[in-house]
Amino acid sequence: MIVMKFGGSSLESASAIERVASIVRAHLDQQPVVVVSAMGRTTDGLLAAAEHAARGNSYLAWKQLGELRNFHIQETRRLLRSQAQAFSEQSITPKFRELHMLLTGLAEGDRQLTPELKDEILSYGERLSSEIVAAAFHRLGINTAHLDARQFILTDNQFTHAAPLYWETYAKLRRTLPYLSERTVAVIGGFIGATEDGVTTTLGRGGSDLTASIVGAGICADEIQIWTDVDGMLTCDPRIMDGGHRVRTISYREAEEMARLGAKVLHPSTVAPAIRQRIPISIRNTRRPEIEGTQIVAKASGANGTVKSIACKKGMTVVHLDVHHVGGLPSITEGLGSLFARHNIAVELVQARQAGVSFTLENSLLLPELLRKVDPSVQVRVEEERAVIGLVGEGIGSTPGVTSRALVALKGIDVRMHAQGSSPSTLVFAVPESALATAVANLHREFFSAVDPELFVAARETAEVGAETARHAAFTLAANTRAVPAN
Ligand code: ADP
Ligand code: ASP
Ligand code: MG
Image (cartoon, rainbow, N blue to C red; front, side, top):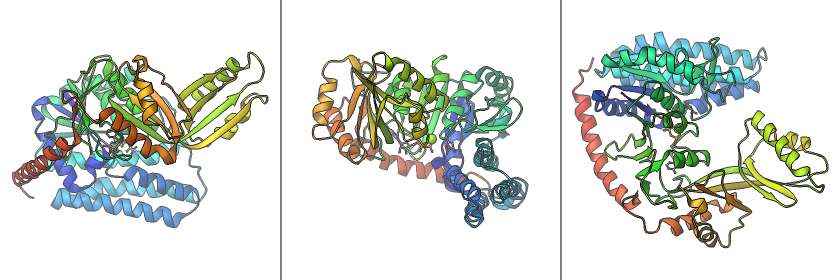
């Protein structure tokens, strides 16, 4: 059995869903279980509608909800043709009616936008997409069963970033999926779960990747495939710089660090459930299925000390705390540590100095309140609009020369802090957000100008293969689509 997870961009339209069906069909002999995100940017749209309603702006809330409704109905019509009307009445319209009621309660001030209500509202994205994809597969001739993720993925009650109850979830998955998958392709919505009392939760933005790895670990899958809109893990974030190379293999640890340091292609918690059973994870491009993508495995190829990729995160704040009394530092860092943990704030780069400590954290609305809790004798300096850049590769933290090469490449850029990250596989730098693109380009030139073809596929080569693959994929899709009786 394998798990195939398709992200929002792979499900952004009827034709994208048809493409997904043809990819799944090509893997039927491996008994796939399919995990889907919400279609396109539905989650953002639901969030915007909820926020408009919570501010009392019902005009914008209804407008946003209307657009989402039309989008789902229109793409369903293209997918299901003559069966669309009945499906919409049974599946889509009731969900939008429920959403309308939830938003009315918010807009009229009867309810607050609590984390619990936010999860309830956002869950509709995956509830809709999973039913639509299952119906589309069925129409395209794939034997399909739809599963409600809330019946299988159990979580605690930390709404908006719930933690899975792994063992209970695995037990539920094991009881059902292996038997079901002998005959059918199970389709399950990612991102969402429920508490043991049945209250809907979400695993945090981008959480469908985590659902995929929980399902994979639950059924002891042979592989977890993350299908998305890029060729694999690239040597740099394509939103910051074009021309990154595809990394052929990375280790679990490298992938975890990439995700933690901002590589959105993978949710940071995705890798952990797979490690225990050493289930390989691959990142694949839905638009170029012939490209083998990036394999995430226990031991990746490449010598220790090789920089594999550059990750980055914008919207960071650098905080410097200066202490003036001896012995004050440990109690402050300890206090802050538990405060951040309680508020789920990730601290990236911590640098202890003789008279204080500096760290970076994601721009946090809670920051002023948190800093007030720091000992009043502590002097606090805050730098906003910073970015964090992480070089990732097994052993680079202890490999002579990597830091100095990076610092030379960053010459002329105001590097405020740099340190080995929380693991020996990262080197992390804080720079002004305005210098991020230049900093990434300089680092990329330094570490990836000439790459080992055993480890990386050069961007140029990928583009050439891509053009060929796109022609091939269009051909396969056309052939697949024609094979299905139109009804
Ligand atoms: P999906 O909707 O499939 O879950 P995401 O938008 O969550 O897709 O993740 C894919 C995106 O991750 C890519 O489009 C790319 O912009 C971003 N990304 C950031 N860093 C990297 C990287 N190093 N390699 C590949 N993609 C990256
Ligand atoms: N739909 C959710 C989001 O946009 C989960 C996911 O796509 O992984 O965050
Ligand atoms: Mg994602």
